[in-house]
Image (cartoon, rainbow, N blue to C red; front, side, top):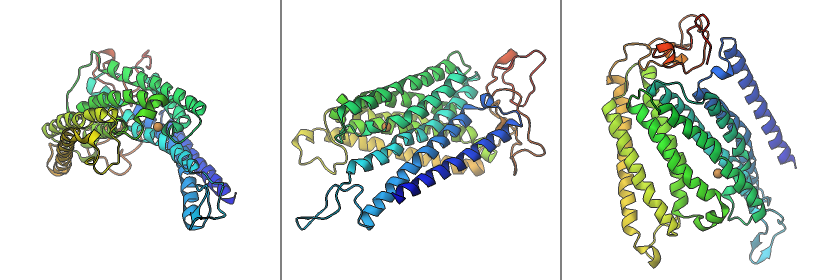
Length: 413
Ligand SMILES: [Cu+2]
């Protein structure tokens, strides 16, 4: 009982601290004209990610506290019965499924903690390098909010095999599949942003487009696994491994790479090498599909995950070649990441120098800082935000910075 109280207090305190931090940040920004609907989508994504984190991590922490008590102090929160030498001890009444609930109450929102920032970064990069305003800005924000909300009521889709009541499973199936709606809205808007754009196919843009590709590929198999009827067949097979590594491994990494190539000039006043970046991109894109595409077939064929060797299983013996192929592709993809690290550190000192403060011609605030921003980012006063973050191609101009006041009679987006 005390334990639950302690975790409840911790939970409330962290929510309050997070809330205070959030409110002061927003108020501070608002005084400089940065209203919520002027925020770049990257910032929206980071904000919502922080809120998801505040609400979900305390539950995992309580789960861990109970686990520590079980393992060290003889409680039995997760142990239904303990037998030692054939004799049942007094500790009864716990449930191992309780641990799964507490774990996945963080575990599912956690996948959005990983993917939402990547989505935000990609929205930004696609818009800047397609020289077009992001399509459906408000729909993008509302989709992030919808995904964040739904992420809290779908956790048991990881537990269809744990013996939960099938009627309860239906609830989780329904809301899991509903997540496809805001996800599809986002994909549609990214593609619509690219449509008719004056696209620069540089490293950040390629990784952003690659993210969309990976998110679609990995997201579609989520619809399979979100259905308990199919999931029960696919449970603990390579199909699951392929699904989640594409959607929150590769896709999240692609979002991160897009962001690094995009903001590197602002961080180090030099560009990363674009040719090496393109080799890094194409190799990783093709390599990632070479790893995970065949893995879906292994999963459908029933090959289980987490097995050290399949030598003793005649059924799986003929998948050896496919596994070898996946292994080689994985080694190649890994080597390409070393190329990225080399490019990163080489470019910090030897990369092509940035000559203007805004080399990509982007509208957002960070590009109004000097070439090498010092402490506080701007010398003198913080600029006042005058408009939303995506004025590209407006009134025949390539881009309009967020700090440029609206012209006479100009309507803000
Ligand atoms: Cu999940």
